[in-house]
Amino acid sequence: EVSFESLDVRGDGERRWIAMGRPIVPSLVVEGRIVPILHVSQIANVLGLPAPARGDASRLAVDTVDLLRAWIELVRGLPVEELCAPTPARARSLRNLTVNVVHPFELLPEAWATGVFPWRPEEDELRERELRSAEHVISYAERTCERWSAFVSELGAELDRRSRRVSSPRGEIDWPDLLDQQRLHVAFHYRQLVAVLDDRGLAHPLPLPLDLLAGLELPAEVF
Image 1 (cartoon, rainbow, N blue to C red):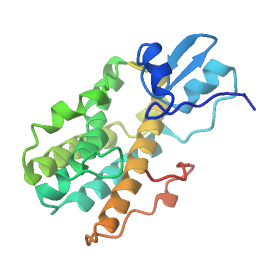
Image 2: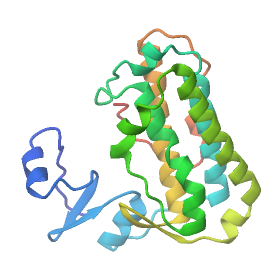
Image 3: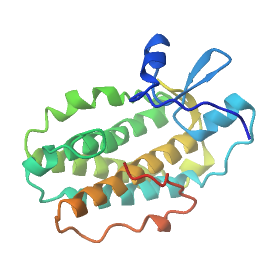
């Protein structure tokens, strides 16, 4: 029940976004102060609202492993032409979306150790240029997924017993909220991936039922 004005930076809001200095999207502007947002808990903190409930960190981490593996199985075998073709998601390619989904999991083990999560999605285009073939895309995703899976298995319940604040370009966030945000992020794009493959008439394995992920709430819009 907080009144707000929502601006789409691709439409009429672009002029105001530029005038504000092109802040990170999404951000809140509260009494003239720009606050970049990574997770809904930050919104609650800024507005003085109760923080939303979240799952245990270990469960959230395991869910992300399952989602990454499901993503890899859907893109495995696609030719590089399909991986590089634009999608309805702001014309981003499946290669770009794969980098966007996978790269944070390269950073999360170090974020646990250091409390710093230097995720900059605006640099994804530079990263994807190194993935010149379909084999490069799959190898990159598999390597990152297996390293993340090993990290989750090694830490186990320690992820629940010990937490920390993590700093990022979008402000500070608790470790479980960071995992929750990444789970939502992968699931959101995973749903887009399934829709793209269906729209292109490409056969693929049955998608992971996202309703199996406890407490996950996704926007109604796919793109």
